Length: 62
Image (cartoon, rainbow, N blue to C red; front, side, top):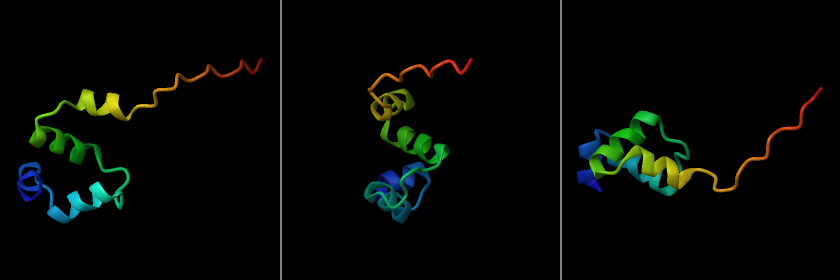
């Protein structure tokens, strides 16, 4: 954990808070830094966190 936090340029405490959900929506730059430190793509993170249920188009208000 210490190595990942250091490579991402964040504190170990911040990483712990992200892992435990105390920071439910980390900043984009934090996520990007963690992806780089862990050698994973932002696309794969976005794909894994997106809603798998297709959204229904909104009804036309006219």
